[in-house]
Every structure is written in C-alpha cells, then in structure tokens.
Image 1 (spheres, rainbow, N blue to C red):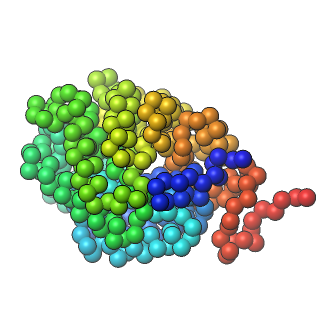
Image 2: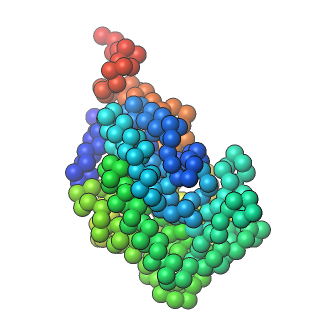
Image 3: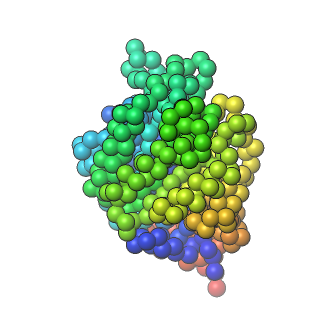
Length: 358
C-alpha cells in the first residue's frame, strides 16, 4: 500500500494523505488583506488533492511583514476574507493551516521580482527588529535590537493572531522559526549576540521560541495540531547546527508540538547550501529517529515515487511540497495515478480521471 496516500491522524484532524502544501509567500496582499489571488492559489491546491494546505507566512504585526505584500492577521478586519478561503479549502476535502510569522531583521523588503531589497522609510518602509543590531547584509540598515518590552509585545501579537486564526477557521497552526526570520534569529549565534537571558547559551537562545510556544498554547485548541518550522542548519560556520535542531525538537515534543517541519538556511548571506534533490530530507530523518517526533520533509521533492520512498524508508511522516505544487496544483491527483492509488476526484473534474485498463 502507498504510504503517500495513507491517512494520518493528528490529534482530532485526519489528513487524507501525506501531501502538504508548503507555505509559499505570494507578495500579493494589500495592508495584509487576502484577495482573490490567495483564494484561487490556495483553493486550487485543495481541489488538486493535497491533504493539508498551509497558508503562507502570515504576519502577526505590520512591522513583522517581509514585504508590503505579505498577508497579515494583526487586525480583526483580516478575518472575513481568510474565513472565505478556509471554508473553500474545507469544502473541497483538504485541511486549512496557517503559518504565523515575524520577519525580524529581514522585514521591510521588496517582493523577489522587484529585487528583494530593503525599502527605505522614505519609500514607505519601516524599521526592522532583531535580537541584536546586526544586519542581514552589511549594506543594509542596522535593525533595532529588541528590548524586553518589545519581546512582550511580539508575544502578545502572536497570541492575538492565534485567536483570529481560530475565528478564521484554520485547523492546523505552524509557528515559523526558520529561514532567517525573527525566531530563527534568536537561535543562531550569527544573529544573536545578546548578553541577557535571551543570548549566549543554547538554553537562552531558544528561550524566546519557548515563550512564544507557551503563549500560543494558551489559546490554540489542544485538540488541534501544532507544527513548528525550523531551519535545521544555517549552512554557515558558527551558526545554528543540526545537533541543536535535534535538541530543540526533543524539547518541543515534550512541550506538546506535534510536527517539526524541517527546512534549512535563510539566516546568513554566507550560507553554502549543497542543493540537490531531497537535500533537506536527512534533517527530517535524523530528528524523527533521535526524538520520536513526527517530521515533515521538504526540499526539491518533485516526484511521486521519490516522495513514496522517503516515507517507506521512515525518513519522514509528511511530504511538504512547494515549487512542484506551483508548477502543478494537481500533482496529488497525478501522483495517485503514478502509484496506482484510487483517490476521490472533484466531481467537476471526474470525467478527466484516468481509468484503469482491464
């Protein structure tokens, strides 16, 4: 039997298969508001058969956006359009998830197709925040180091965002602690040179993550799954390591996190990433084997049999796909045919379903 098309029970949520739509920023919102682009983008992946559709990094505050085009959930007015999206996803047999994020020192940037450069205040940008006054690139303005009151505000922003996410109908929540954004910045010695209780030792560098987790768990339903996305390594000398990721994952498991979504990189401009098919899968495998927590594998997974093999070999429990699902929103339907699995198609598309030859 195919593991890729076997269900997975996560608390009170049953995923119909192991294919997850990775959070992928669309840089297409205005003032944080979702629009028809987001409805079609996310909705088409639900129609395409993915079990879980995780919405792009959604900012918990205006200053927490990567770009002016990021989705937001920092005010109640954002909820109604998001509720339309989650309703469509659920009506079409998938589960709606949301990734909550704060961009930290990588905030106030243009969209990738505009160069991804920092936006000056004169051009409508805003001050970026970070654990320490260290810019991502030497040419960029120095971010403002967060004081204790600033950290309290961000925790409160996450809590309020979770309450809105519940109201909007999301059934899975992912905390974004990867890709060089704020929480990840606290993890890495390359970006965190604090001398207070949030810097120095491993225990201090993960403290803010644990505080956010505790804040989120005060309001997120215990019966609903909670994911954390991490960058398992910085791919840079002196940065966050795979061994630290294993240690953190063990702690997160003991504190009630259900799945570690294993990505990597994004923190250092000096990173050296050996990009290849499935290059991040070993992180998911190591964390799964050494801690026992469920893991999600991501990173140039593009073929049905490749995804199936990852699961069959016990390297991960979920397959999180990004670019391949941009190229083909209906990959899950095609993958089922490749693996000779019978899956339900949307009634409107049923006439296009491949038929088995007798």
